[in-house]
Structures are given as C-alpha cells and as structure tokens.
Length: 275
Length: 184
Image (cartoon, rainbow over all chains, first blue to last red; front, side, top):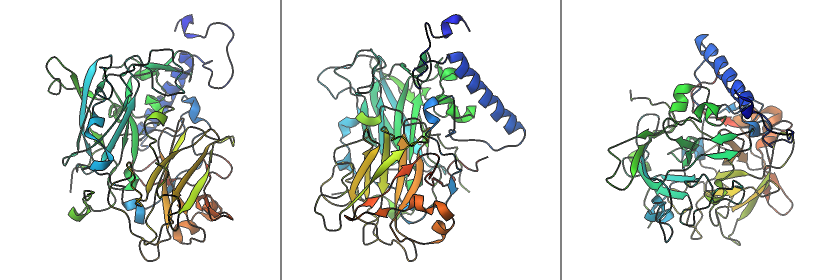
C-alpha cells in the first residue's frame, strides 16, 4: 500500500468521519476470513448468511445483538407472509427508465431472475422491491451528500410482482459506485438493493445485487460481512447475452433463493387476487 | 426428497432506503376511528442507548377474530384492515403504527405481532415478537427475565408501547428461525 492510502492532513478522529485507512479495514476483513477458513477446516459449520457482528463495518459496532438469537419454531402468523396483489403494484413500476419525461443517463440494463424457496419451488405472485443510485453513484435521498449529479429523469425505485413461475424483471440503469464514510477512500461496489417476501414471514429478505468482476469486492466491508466466499458469490449477477437486446440494453441474470418454508404449501394457499 | 438450494444471503438495508421502501400510510394499517384501533409505538435504540434514526420496522398481525388476511392491498390502502405495515423511525428513533390487536389464531397460542427490524449498520434483518400484555406460554417462559423485552406495555391511553434495544442492557430477544441452517 502506498502513502496515498492514508488520510492527508490531521486525521479526523470523530466516529464515522472516515479517519481510518483502507489498509487497516482490509487487514481486518482478511483476518476474519482467514479465521473462518481455519474454522471450516477444523470442522466448524458453514455460514451461509452475513455476520451481524462484523467490526470492519463500523456502523454495526453498536447495532448488532450481543446475545445469541433465540432459536424459535415459527408459529401462527409467522407461517404466513403478507400477500400482494395487482392493485399494490403498477406495471410501469418495473421500468425505472420511463418514470419521468426524459430518458435517464447511463447504461440501460435488464435485470431478470427467479425467486425460489429452499426447495426450488417458485415464489409466485410476490412483491419484489428495488432501489439504487443513478449512473453517477448518487441516490435521490436527502441524506446522500455525495457531490455527484442527480438525474432529473431517474428516481431509482422499482416494484414488481413475480409471475406464476417466480420470474421478475426490471428495466433500469446500471448504478455507479459511490463513496461512504466507513473509512478513508471507502467506495461501495455498484449494487442494486432488493427487498423480497416469501410465503412464510420468516423468509423476509433484504439484500443487494452486485455486478460481476467488480474490483471493489475485496475492499468492501458490507459485501464482506458474509465470511463464506461461495455465499458471497450468490449476490453477484451474471451477464446474460440471451437477455441482452439488440441496440437497446445489456442483460443481467440474478436468481434469489429464500430460506426454506416451514409450512407445507397447499394449492389453496395461493394468494387470491384482490378484486 | 426435493432439491435443496442454498439461500441468498441478506445484506444491510443501508442508509438510503427512505426514498424507496416507506410509502404513504404504510404505518396506518387501519384508519383513525376504526373500532378497536390501537397505537403500537416505541423507540429503537443502539448499544449506547442512542436512538436509531435510520431503522425500518414491519409488523404483521392477525385480525382480532384470529383471521390472517390473505389478500393484497398493503401498499394501496383502501381502509380495510390488512394486518401488515411498514414504518421508518424518525430523528428520535421513534416509530408508530395504527392497527388492531391480534386475536387467537389457534387454541392455546398467545397472540403477538411478528416484527422485522432493518437498519443501517445492521448486516441482516432481525425478527422478534411483540406480545400483547398478559400473554403466557412455553416460548415466553423459556425467556426468563428477558421475556419483558418482547412484551408490549399498555399505556394509560390504551396504546401499546414496544421499544427495541438492538444491543446491551435490556437487549431485545431476537429470533433465529434456522433460515441459514445451523449456526456455529
């Protein structure tokens, strides 16, 4: 690492003020992963999710439970998820490029995939929500102070319902990476936030989809909250030339697997369409 | 035996969900003046006891009859009770919902609101339960002293208070439904 990786001038030691170096954060990330790999080699279980206690992600320090989570069998209301109907979502909400008078600036993309449960059953007619930065890496959010341009033709919010085979599809713009204050020169890899529901309340998932080959992956303490590299890879979409359209948009495929259901799904549990 | 797929891991909701996930009347599961309407409210605090101003909560509860609503209408409300709602915390870490009190869905099961918590700085969602005052049962008994962290408190005006402490003294009991498989 060069001295350019250290903050210039007097370090600002206030919390969240980006005083620490990438080298220090990266060393912490590497140490946690090495420990995880050693544990796996010694027979410790796979970790398929993110760690809640992940110190390199500094905002998590005071926000993770310190007591172990209470193992529980889902009961009553937890065995059902809220269902969403056609009147909850307008079809235009799946196309983030047509929500304003003009065309947004950036690389137009199609993102398509299937939502499945742990038994490979499609999650049918269920809500998928996304939000993202614009092509310049700026969110349309009052707390985003990154001095990159807003795009008057891009909001960056989408919703859709999966179809009867669990497929979703969005038209959008490839988001840019953006800086944040976890440490000095912290940049998030480009990503799209996803929010999903299953057929059980316990399957609720909020996650982020990334783009293949991003050089920021090893440096990002949010992507790295998942210590298992195979599990991390599940957050990365693949380029899909079959989804790419002639002279219009490139295509990315990303399937999402929710945790297994606890309740046997019967045909009569299919959500009824609201009138 | 069906094929088993590995789950997609969660990631933090981040700081910028506020322009995307909250929606009009998301926290108003019933209209003002609805018979039986109750305010469910509280504050989310971190391990230093500071309010968490960038958290998102979702609650899900049965109707007073015990019925679980199986139709849509959560995002475009029309005055009918749907049981599900979403609220973001304000600058003081405070949230509120207007809803109905859940009834018994099956004999012997104490009613509760199922609660999901998201926040900047929280790498994955957390689940908990908000039980109605006076609830009893094996689940609560197993929590010992910590059962009070999953109990709503009835306030003099009838509202239900449910504070969430993410860490430290009085830390809320969060639930692991085994979604990611056995944990180390």
